[in-house]
Length: 433
Ligand code: GDP
Ligand code: GDP
Image 1 (cartoon, helix red, strand yellow):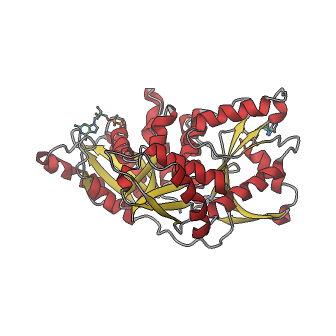
Image 2 (tube, rainbow, N blue to C red; image 1 turned 180 degrees about the vertical axis):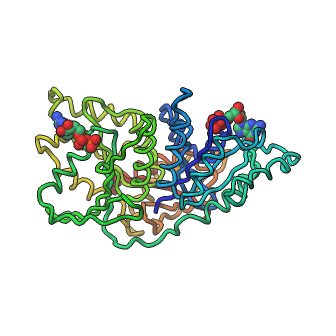
Image 3 (cartoon, rainbow, N blue to C red; image 1 turned 90 degrees about the vertical axis):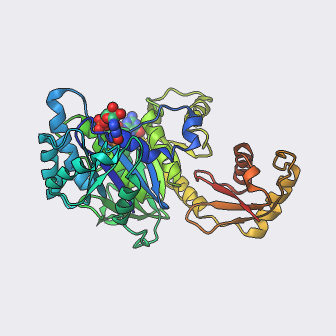
């Protein structure tokens, strides 16, 4: 189930500072390694073992005076519809402003859990000033300092209590989500798959008003398609179109097992796509890339390779991902997308017998053991796959703390070479024997 926490509030109260604090522990190594300009508006946070997505609405508002109040009001409305919990940030140094009051009014009408976060309470002498925010009429207040981090633990303790339990899904069919920027061809491919033969489709009302899950069962493929493309909402404020679509994408992504990231061949893979890719990777989803509108590209015998390399360079270091080139309008390789999605799904669910795993991996490790550190030798004795929804392996050894990233990566590559985890993030742990 998706747990999205939206940070709302007027400008300068400290939304982005709070956002950075909540997501910083999770700045995965991959972000720094890929050298990509990161979208700072949404990311994964973790608290007492619960992962959730945090979205900073402030990033989506233009700074021009006349639009921003309207934009903020609309964002709050979208957040009420789409988020699972809302952090309403206010500023202890300014007290309650008119815009704070307006936002509070909107939030009071919504049905989502709201946390009044009184920010900039940098020291206890300000606690008294914070009490005024009870008058917003939104219940308990949480005094924090985003700058120092004080109070955020108490806040998060309460926030995670509102999350859906990780319930067993109502059916066990694979769930696919086709995501990508506007106009890449998402609706077209969905129409190509389900368009004419309406009786193969059962739209199932999702958890929210307009989340549509389509049950597809044809050509040997049975899965649930989480439809984001068909759900275009009119927003009055231009800036919020992106906010809204990001929100929908994150939600679909959290619900799905397999993310089909569609890009337009003429535009290539862009930073927004890479952000979605990394989010899917961090959430341990299966991933494939579809390069659509292939009919519009002039091709020679090297074109596919050139495109593939350009994409892999941008999604690095997780590059073991299938790429399919389609033309939906020319009906080229549309079903291939489903074949590959199914393979990725199977790879993600794959369980390798312990004996086979050890038979293959131990000789590799013996030939190329972890480098000795401070004169100490690391001995890996045994490996097993942990029972989980995505592939996880535990390597048991004497000195797990001595194994560094390059060796972990070496092991991951060898697992990939031998067992085919194409499209699937693989987690590797070294544990004390
Ligand atoms: P946003 O517009 O709501 O995203 O606000 P920012 O996160 O950009 O913060 C606005 C200003 O408030 C910046 O100068 C921050 O450094 C400052 N700020 C944010 N959090 C705190 C805090 O906890 N204490 C203090 N004293 N300043 C803060
Ligand atoms: P969405 O916003 O991602 O759902 O994109 P649409 O499915 O609405 O497609 C956007 C536009 O691209 C439409 O005009 C489609 O006809 C066109 N389109 C979709 N797929 C292809 C393709 O494979 N080749 C070409 N040339 N046009 C395509």
